[in-house]
Amino acid sequence: MPMEAHEFISKKGFGLISSYMTQQGDLHGSIAASGAILHGYPQSVVRGEEMLRRLGEQQFEIWEEEILYFDPALEDAQEIKRMWSREREKARRLFATGFVEAYQKHIRPEDERQKRNQEHEERMQKLNKEPYEYETDRPLIRQKIMNEGSSVARNEAGALYPQVFRTRAEIEQLGQTLCGKQLARYDYKPNYTDDKEEFTHLFVSGFVPAYEQEVAEKDKQAGIKPQPTTSTTQGATLTLKQVERKANEYVYHIELTDPGHIDGVQTAEVVYPLGEVEPAQAFASAGYAVSASDSTPSYKVIVPLPTSQQQKGARLYVRNVKKK
Image (cartoon, rainbow, N blue to C red):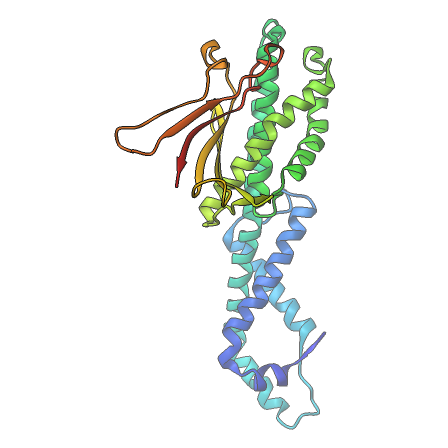
């Protein structure tokens, strides 16, 4: 809606013009950047700061023409008009400054996203140019599919942060959706796509932890602390304090309280190994050891599985059980 110059100048006063005009420039710069991203990126994006400033000044003139008008019926219309003429150059400069800063701020994340996509495409092209004789190595194929899921996850989470998914179900669903797009890349490699269900499983297995790790790293940079997850059943409370995803294992740090049944608060690490478990470890019994620097017993419990299930990543065990 048009704004009366009288209201803008006399009521707001020129004491507020600096912040107001900068805000108007910021608003128009954001709108212009969004339009450039949606319609013809990157060709439609203005890059040079001088060109951006001129564009901001043009937008100011459009704003002035469409928004600001002078009511000739007011007694002090001529005085108001003279006041605006005196401050117009300052207003134009402030508007253009806000416009440039907002435009660059909104274009930067899209530039980073496009850069990530380009790097990903280059990695894929390099992968696809590898000699075909190596593509018959099944373990290597499985690892490459998981790596592909991890790469896509980091790219997706990094580009969209902080508008990211947080729950495991949402992340898995996103991974499955993006996996469908990746399958088309391997149509000419039957060794990859002969079992689409396995491809999806491997892709999502690599996607989910990488996505969560990327979000956790971004949260840490932003100063956002992870919230512990707590569950209570029959008076016993289990709290998941932290998750560490390493190259060879996932470690879940937990706290357990059960008043009247367990003395105090017990802490432990639940470990999900990703590599092969040593044969001797598979049948180890529960035990404990006392560290020289800590008189509190530290327990390590191995939960063996039937022989048919003793495979990579299929064994869960608890270690470093301590009283807090």
